[in-house]
Length: 427
Image: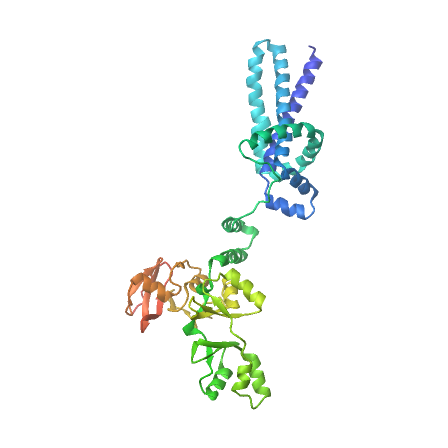
């Protein structure tokens, strides 16, 4: 065998190793592509992404053409290496060529290209798809025969090869994707997306205004008192009832009523009742996702939460649900201090016992438990298993708490600090 032929064999051997690297890298690159990014690019009309999507629709054909090509070039390379080794070393060259080709193929034809493809799948998969599409057309008869035999064997194990289904994510998996997005999604937007995912787990009872805090208009009171309440109410809508909220009549849009009162000097109780809109009731176990859709479909903003016996438990509003997504519309603790939360100089907060745990967690970015009682008063009662006295101290989820005021059988106000112990002020 002359030197020219040996030189050609070395060139062919190098080309075959390169082809082996191509097939190995292509396989890893295509299989490790981000399917959601690929789908996005394909929908945007990217030709390379469309090619890759077409290949991945039938993974059996894709793997078939890749392995056919890879095995062919590896076997041919081994044969050429054996010929070269025998030429130089005789019979001893067979063993040496086997060891040498195993190392060469492993390093240059498998590990290196697959590692590169795993690190940069898009750079490898998109250009490779053009070659693989062409090879699939050329080798389709052979690929079809191979896949037919393989699929027949797989059916013996009750495995059916079909078009690859669209990948779907569960809520927990999607939550992980959002958390791992990093700087790709601003922190504020991450919080909102995670809140949306949690809506299905939260019911209207978790965020409702309890019945004893619902602002309502009792029609059994005197007309002068009703007018005074209408003119001084800070709310735009009121629940209208007779005697008790369990005898609710409906909802009243305050702005419309005040406009009518200004236009009609003899406005009376009958006119007022004519402006009352029928009540809307919401079962206590309704998820926020479902209720948000219900509000949208029914064009409602208010609903009375009722239990299985039909008793009114509280009031849920569209704004309450939106706050679960975007947070408090007023996020400055000093601004909400006149309601349920008042900051103190020592780092603690004076909190109304009726404040919901979810509101505290949202306003202060805390993680007080929400799988039990829904208010701070309820959480304290559950922890102590008794009605406390003023001055009693306890710790809730690592937060020091001191009872300030008790009204009847409930905690009216308490002071709660962050995880650090409260500062002791000088007398």
